[in-house]
Every structure is written in C-alpha cells, then in structure tokens.
Image (tube, rainbow, N blue to C red):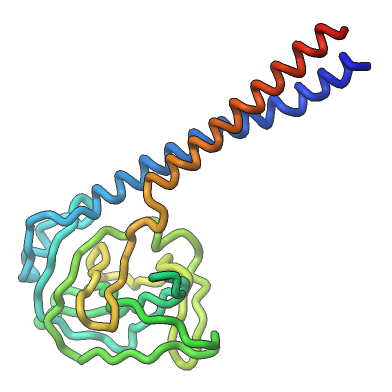
Length: 227
C-alpha cells in the first residue's frame, strides 16, 4: 500500500514540477521582453521639428523628441481606460492632430487625467485648437494593443479599453506623448512591471520546483526503504 501511495504522489507532483519550471522560463522571457521595450523607449538625441523630418525616420526603430505646431481635431478625442498613476485609476486622453499645412496626421496622447467618481461620466479636458506640440514619439507597443477596444460612448464621448482598431487610417505610425497639455503627462507604453519583477517571479517558480523535486525524492526513497 505504501508503494502505491508513493507512485501516486510522484505521478501527481511531476507534472506540477514541470509547470513550475515552465512558468519560471516564461517569466524570464517576459523580463527580456520588458528590457527590450525599455531599450526601444530610450530617448535618443534626435530632435525633429518639421513634417519632412518626421517622414524620414522610422518610429518602430527609435524614439524621438518632436516639437512642431499642430491643430487638434476635437471630434477625434477618446479616452483610454484603466491607466494607473500613483495607484489612482484614470484615463490617457488621445486625439488626432494635423500639422499646420495639413500634410500629416498624428495620433497624440494628450496626457493623463484621474477617473470620475462614477463610470457614467468622463473627465473634462481643455486643449486649445492650435498649439506647439512638445512630445516624445514612441512606437505603438503591446501595452496599447493587449485587448479589443470595446468602444463605448459615455456622456457623448468615446471610451475604449485599447487602441486596437481605434486609431484611424492615414495617421503617422507611432504615438506622440505630449508634455504639458493636461494636469499630468501620460506614462505611455512603459511597462507597468519592470524586468526585475519578472526575474523575482522566475526565482520563486524555480525554488518551488526545487522544493517539490526534493520532496518527491524524499517520498520515493522512503517508500523504497519501507517497501
């Protein structure tokens, strides 16, 4: 009977050990992805100030500082839900803008605002029709595209859960993180959990696998000695 229990224990525990090891390697992979994202978002020395300069660079390969006059399209404003700053839930507010000559259309992240006390209202914002855009041009990363948009109209304005299928065709690739337009600037696509967090989780999973493996070895040997 003891031998039978021993084998049942091993049969149950071995797959769990495998899952722990797999989870540990998945956390290591996520940490590497976060490191690559942070590297992509590292601001270079390039400063762009004309529409022609914007057309000559690739936002998916680098991050740029941009300063140029634009006109906002107030009808295109929408609110990206569940964006947290200092443990406060709020929105990152987006809108389309165009260069003064109308030659380029840009997707601008106007900034962050705290959420209203109730879900049936959206915070009010005030942005001038024309302004000097001082922004960081970043790639469209997975933090903006992790789910469907689930767009809904609230208080006459649009609220979405992601940017998937929301940004219209014809806008320049990437997102412009504006500075100084709203009460707070948006954090943008920076990862909410840094690489060090995923490394910590990986260590925990590997330690759990080691503990289970040691326990399995003990039970197996004890069963043989009493068999």
